Structures are given as structure tokens and as C-alpha cells.
Length: 100
Image 1 (cartoon, rainbow, N blue to C red):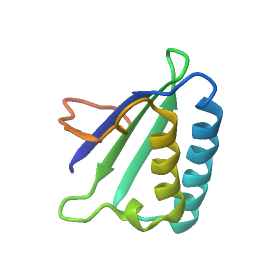
Image 2 (cartoon, helix red, strand yellow):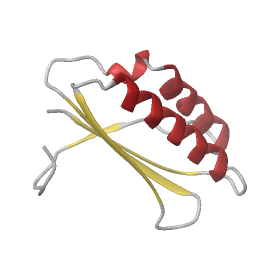
Image 3 (tube, rainbow, N blue to C red):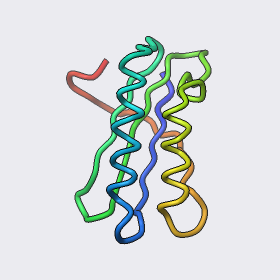
């Protein structure tokens, strides 16, 4: 199961816009209920710092590209950060508990 990680900091005053976009994206994903992913997003520990993990089932395309609100989240992040928008990076899970 490929795992992608993203972490970034937003400019001062733009975190609320990103949080709203995250909430809208998760609402849409919870309605669509794709079974080929697990996805988590967080804010902190520092102010304006965000991170996310996305687990994809083996051999499937990322279904988030077909969710309008997930694309809007990408756009909100691109507007909120200085410089180039962050890109997800592959990571290797070494251990977990309670995560499938």
C-alpha cells in the first residue's frame, strides 16, 4: 500500500482558509467513500503548520483527483504557501497500530 506524506507551512493569516478547504474535502470524500484510500490531515504542532498522510491501495490511481473539493484544497494550499506548492512524497511505514 503506497503511502504519501505532505507537510507545509502557510503564510500568516491563511491557515483558516486551508482548514475550511480541508473540512470541505473530507466532507466530500466521506460522501464519496472511496474504498481504495485512507487519508488523515492535521494542523500543528506549530502555528500555520499542516501535514497529511494518504495510503493508496496497491495498483489504484489516487481517487482524490476526481473529487472537486480535494482539487480545491490543492488550490487553497497553493495560494496559502510562499513559493511552490508542496508535493506529496512517498514514505515507508515501519510500524503502526490501529491503522489498516
